[in-house]
Every structure is written in structure tokens, then in C-alpha cells.
Image (cartoon, rainbow, N blue to C red; front, side, top):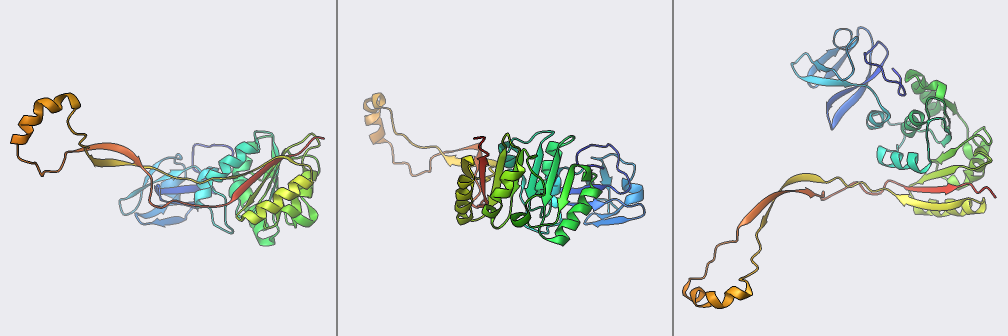
Amino acid sequence: MSFVEYREQIQDGDTAIIFLGHDSMFPVTIKQGSQTQTKYGVIRHSTDLIGKNYGSKVTCSKGGWVYILYPTPELWTMNLPHRTQILYSTDISMITMMLELKPGSVVCESGTGSGSLSHAIIRTVAPTGHLYTVEFHQQRAEKAIEEFQQHKVDHLVTVKNQDVCKNGFGVSHIADAVFLDIPSPWEAIGHAKDALKIEGGRVCSFSPCIEQVQRTCLALEEHGFTEINTLEILLRVYDVRGISLPVPDFGTPAEEKGESLVADKAKPISTSQPGTVQFKSGVSPREMVGHTGYLTFATKNLF
């Protein structure tokens, strides 16, 4: 099992996603002789999972069933163990596009955190690219190394446990892009510029507070970066549902008024409600997920 290569069959040691529904799923490490408890009953790894194809429908001991899914960066983002606040697919997709990442790209990242963005970057730059990721917290760095090895992507990533604001990324003039998710990104802009290739590159900083964005933009300008812009991604999901609305009464057309005037006077006044019409429509939620953070992008100036 690898996050950058697909395999049909479930094997011992794999990380799989147990899918109970769109709002209910969780990761599990497949082990010979182990079992996993769900609300639909027990899943026995040896008999129910190992040797079966990913995507299979597995019947649990109580008669209910689940699907076993191959892990992708998107599914991992939804199910990973949180060691820190993470970036979700909405922001990750924008970061990947605006940094112009592609297979073969070299990326520097700080900090690693729970590895949500790291897995997406690795999948994007594989099979010939590389990710250099820096994590200040020693235990989180060690856990990230362990996960990358378990997910068979450790050959595409180098994890360093150091302070990027003081010691940088440990590489110079090799990166196509730099991503910063740290409390004071303005202190690491000089190191980011040094890590980028001499012929240029892109940098992105994620910050939850606008004051952080302001100081980062000033630092980017001081170090000669151009095309500095800040984005905020707000996700609004629309539900498709049946709507019932009253048919409006626009009155009688002008040409018919004269003909029907006498007849209308003879009719009693109607107090019944106008008719209604039903149709399908996209309805916005009363509440939505709001601000997550600001994404600031900039380009290294060649001159």
C-alpha cells in the first residue's frame, strides 16, 4: 500500500479506510489475526479483509456492511489523527494550483504538523519530485517520519526537526515552491528565498490572522518578491431540495379589463389562497463553515 501507487488487493500491514457513510469513516491498519469493531459488528482482518479487493463491500458480524477504501490524500485528510490543526482539501487544492506543483517539483514545507498537506504534495510531485518538510516539535517530527514510512512515501520526503526561522530548510537553491504554516512566517521569508531556485519560484504562507498577513507581505516586499496577493477560501455547500412557492397574482391583462369589468362586479370576492408550484432548487445552508485562514502567495523576483 502506497499513497502514490494504487494496488488492487488488501494486504497485511496496509492502511485502509473503513467507510460506513459519507459522514462516518475511519482508518485502520490491517493486521493478520486482528479485528475491528464497528456499529454494524466485528470485521476480522484475516478472513474479511486480507486478499479482498479495495472497494469491496464487507459484511460485519451483526449483518450490517461497510466498504473498504484505498487511502488517498483526500480521504487521509478527513480521517487522520490530529496532532495539530490541519489544512483541508479546499485550501490544499488552491495551494497546489497557485504554487504550480507538478510531477518532478521540489517543495519545501514548514511546519509538517499532522501531515495533511504533506501527503497531498507528495502525491502531486511523485514519482520524481521531493518534499523537504521541517517540524519544530520533535515528537510530531518523529510521528510524521513513522507515518511516511508506513505509507510507503518516505523515499519522496525528507523530514527535519529544527526551527525554520533560525536554521532554515537545510537546502539552498533547489526548491520550485515553499509553503509556510508557522506562527511568524515573516521571520522565515529570507530562508524561503534562499531555498528557492536561482531562476525563481513561488512561495505561499498560511495565516489565520490578518495582522500576520500584513507583516508577511511587508517581509515579502523587503526581500524583493513580486505578485504578492492574499486569498481567503470560503466553502458554501448547496443542498438540492423540493421548494413550494405560491403562484403570484399579476392581475388581469389591460386588454381584458374592459371586457371583464361588468362580469367581475357580478362575481363574489374570493378569499382563497393562490395556487402553489413545486420545483427543485439549490438551497444555501443557514450556517456555513467560515474563516479558516488567509493564503498569501508571492513570486521570487529574478532581478
